[in-house]
Length: 171
Image (tube, rainbow, N blue to C red; front, side):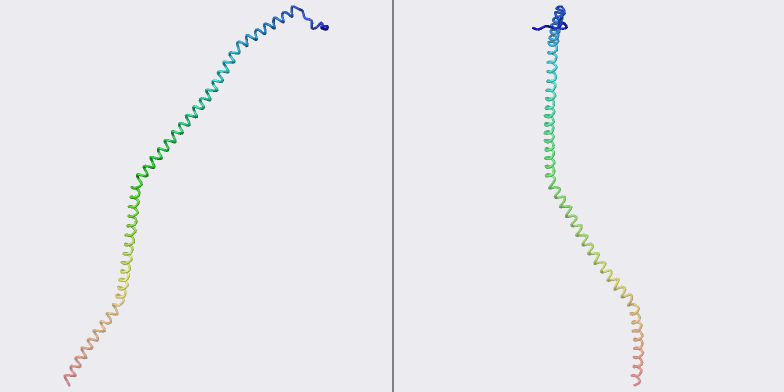
């Protein structure tokens, strides 16, 4: 070995104390490690279990959601099928009602058309009668004039007859 500098030389009492302190520190560190290792293991187990329970809860929630969705789908399908059956049952009655309403509307339109046609005929007759009435009303003064002329002609004819009778009797 070579020469050891004087600054490195330590006194044996101090070295022994330092060695004892190191042993004591190592023993204390071992004791702390022995005490802390189970705590760390327990904490790790708790954290892992909590993670597993969260995952289990997530899966359970997803399973419950799936079950609820399936249940809702089944209920919706049952409701739709019930409505389809209701519609199928109501369809003949609705068809009859539609046909009845259609026939009623058709009859109403036919009656309306006949009434309209009748009104047109009556109006045509009325217009014709009014036209005839107007012609007759306008012809009344002419007819009265002709009647008066006929009376005059008759009077003239009677006078002529009397005159002829008078002439004939004279002859």
